[in-house]
Structures are given as C-alpha cells and as structure tokens.
Length: 300
Image (tube, rainbow, N blue to C red):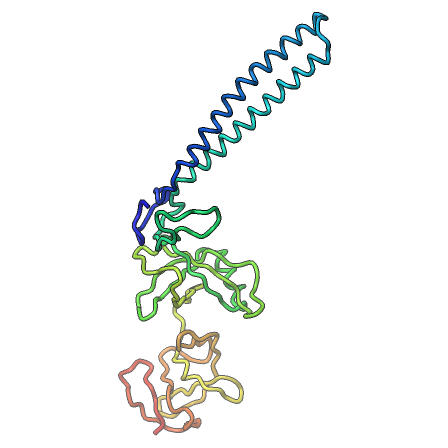
C-alpha cells in the first residue's frame, strides 16, 4: 500500500502492489517455452527447405516434402502462440502495479495488505474525483424548451448552496438528459463545478439555483401584494388623496417571494402589501412607514 486512506492522489500515482512472484514465474515459463519452440521451429524450417530441394532434384517424394513443410508451419504457429502467451503474462505482471486512474480523494481500503485479491471481486479502494465535481438535479419538463434555448446561446450558470451556509458554489450547466422520467415528469440535468475549496463532496445534498437569463430594470413587488380578483390578479394602489384603487396587473412569474409586474403599475407608485382583505376601492388608508420605498399601506 503506497498511500494513506483519505489521501488526495493524482492520475498515474502508484497506489497498490500485488505480490508479483507468481506472475513473474509465469512470464519466465512462457519465455522458456518460446525459446524451446523457436529452436524446434528453426530445425523444422531447415528440414522443410532441405526436402524441398530434394524434391526439386527428383530425389525425394513429394509427400515426404509436404510433411516437413507442414511440420515447419505448425512450429511457426506454436511460436506465435508462445509470443501471445508472453504478452498475456507481461500484462498480468503489469496489473500487479495499480495506479490511480484519476485525480481525486481516496476512501478507506476495503482489502488489507495480505488479503487475497480476486479478479472482478470487490473494489479495493474508491477514488472520488473532487475537482471538478458534478451536481445532478432534476427540473420539471415545462422548463426544458427554455433550458435548451438558452443553453444554445451560451453557458447557463448554476449555483449550489450547502445546508446551513449562505455562500454558494458557482458552476455551469453541462448536461441535459435525452429522456424524461415518466414517473416524476422531470428531466435530469448535470452541472460542473470547479470546487476549488472542496466544499462539495460526493453524496452531499445541496440546493441548486439554475439561472436561465437576467432581465434588467424589471418592475417587482412583493408577491403577497397581489390578490385574486373577479377579472384576474390585482394590486391595491394608494393614490395621492390616500384612497386606494384596485388595479388589475399582469405578472409573468414569481421568484423567491418577488413578483415581476409586466403591466398595470408605474414606477414609484405606492401599493398595499398587507390587510387587503379589509379594503375596498375608494377607502382611505394611513401609511405607517412612509420612509420605506414603495411603502406598505394599512387600512385605516
């Protein structure tokens, strides 16, 4: 064992050595067999050439010459098989040195020095790649057209926030699956993170924020300021005379408690964000916190 459990290892680093003596002996045996069969092959080929000349001179029977030629060809085939056996023995000997296939962090050793190692038995050690690292998540299929649209235009940023932490890790969307999970109606996505501080580890659950685009100078209001009306969504607007007006609005989306207003309000208007159930158009209200931008209005 050439590392400590939990070490960070690099691609090509020697990790483990399996006892090579049985494989060294097998290689030596294969090499000896090759040397023997080469000697036999040289003799067989010489015999074949001698009888070929005798056949051409009319001294030897054709059947006897053909027999020696066949024996020489068979000897060449045996030599080729011996060479393949040597390659196999060399490969088995190389497998006695186990190198890391990736850069990553090792886990605990599942087999200890002295244990018997079997082919395709159990993993000896698991190496998890940390830099970069992948975050797998799903989104409803209704967002798939937008995701494909903005992914074709450039990179889509992704943020992953760890539990009980505020500062997110930043990465980008790198994979969109080619089929939908019919049981959940979602599609699988994958984001790649540099993970320079190793805050993300395999198996950790994180909160993911996928940002498709940014809309500048958007008009927003608290989502709870919008109430349902008979003809759709509306907001109570406080006019100059401190009376309220029920204003129909159009909101395209809500994000984290903030609603984007596409139509119905003007910048700087004061709206009611609490107590709308007690209001009716034309009622007067008293502004309790005028210092607050877009101040909250309560019914008087």
